[in-house]
Length: 128
Image 1 (cartoon, rainbow, N blue to C red):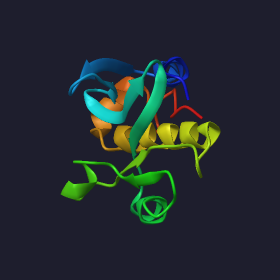
Image 2 (tube, rainbow, N blue to C red):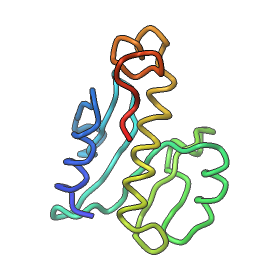
Image 3 (cartoon, rainbow, N blue to C red):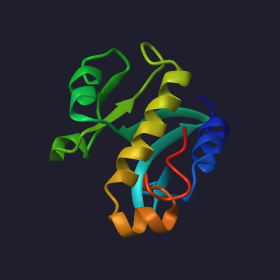
Image 4 (cartoon, rainbow, N blue to C red):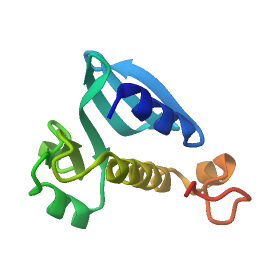
């Protein structure tokens, strides 16, 4: 996946913000909470980390081209890093990124979710 495609996708998610931090990593957040981190070399993604459910973590960490995200998984957080498209092609990665966005957004306060239009009772629901 190119950095441009990754950026365009993350930018398309409501209330998504970008910051370059941690030694040049491309970090995407919702309301200050990280949902995706990518590294690149010459415009190609070298690895992308994202939050997953406990079940997905258990399954994905054993798949070729995936591993527990360095630093995050070692601290008990359920984050996966995809290092190659060996078993998870780009279209599946985008699904996992959307799910990571939803998981992180669901962890925001109910008040903030409602203000951002992300709660089930708000006029705008989570992006599909």
